[in-house]
Length: 66
Image 1 (cartoon, one colour):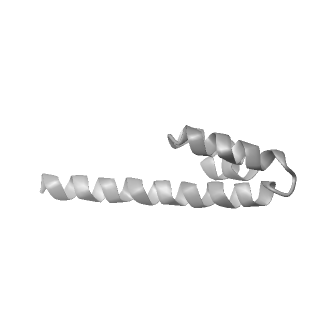
Image 2 (cartoon, one colour; image 1 turned 90 degrees about the horizontal axis):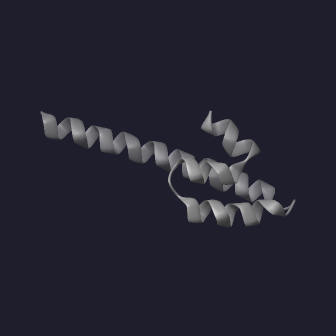
């Protein structure tokens, strides 16, 4: 779901992952037609980093419980 959001509304992804300042910067970039592609790429990259961070947190949490 967030991947589709990253493609069509890149700035909104940053608000869903807790990075509102980056979302505003991305919106400014997205307003220009030529900036839409870099904004989309940035949103997809940020989303992948967010997912990786969550997996690492989960692994560390499971390791502490053992």
